[in-house]
Amino acid sequence: MEKPYILHMLSTEKNLSPFDVNMAQDAGWQVTMPYLHVKEDEVQGLVQDAIFSRGPAGVKREAVFIGGRDAECAVKMLKIAKESMVPPFEISVLADPSGAFTTAAAMVAAAERELDNKFDTGLSGKVVLILAGTGPVGQIAAVLCAKAGATVTIMGRQKEKSERVAKIVNEFFGEGQTNIAGEGNDKLPQLLPEADVIFATGAAGIQLLTAEQVAAAPKLKVAADVNAVPPEGIAGIDAMADGAPIAGSPSGAVGIGALAIGNIKYQAHHRLLKLMRETDKPVYLHFDQAFEMAREFIKSKK
Image (tube, rainbow, N blue to C red; front, side, top):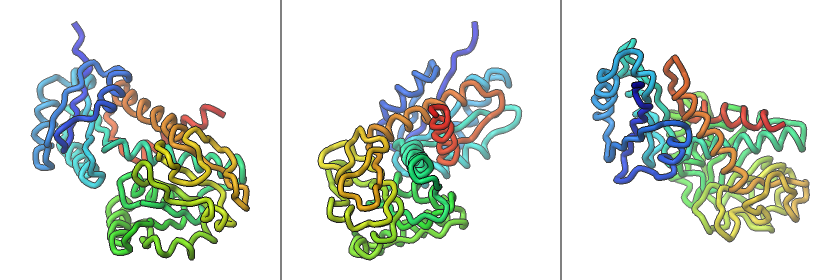
């Protein structure tokens, strides 16, 4: 009898995400075992318990998923997990806290697609504003855009918090190679005229960019909104929008809504989980690989 495919699912929270469990099962993982309230110093022990309970062939049928809600903690746990492997006892690891890594990857990849399709350009050299960008999705979207060559500003209600988050993103996620800025929302009127791309990554049901503000962005090309609950996070972008023109945009900007982003996110998430199940060589996956998967899915639909 063949050993079952086991996905050990770690979370710092009191509950494991049902979404993540469903995704794992649909990707072919037969056992999805939860470990809750996990602390960083417990990761090594859990990983080594997993790898040493099976032989070198058996470990190819198990992997680790890291969830929770803290993006920085998830990446730290992934690094600890990787360092805990003892060849040939090695397993794959995927970090995607609250789906933030795959959601941000999907949103940025979709914006990149629209820049290419509608404006014959890319993210390099573009000015990107991330509204309510201090949360996990905004942080990861910021670093992906900055790595692609864009000039990125994280926006928030408090300038001090935005600056603090931008510093963390640059040092930790950007590994000192990015130069993301942080600003308060009071600076939005000054920044809008130069914005090429705008992302809204705030809480559901809060409008972050009004129709008047859309009209005040003469260089805007693409805007994306992860909020599926009315009112729209960006005025004029329906949840189903997938490159549709934004009414009132003087530059002919197009919008991408939450459900269109969600479809790409689902595909990237599914492919990452499936990759871990099918690979012969261990892989260690986070937002960079999620971005690659989102891009691959988009290319496959051309």
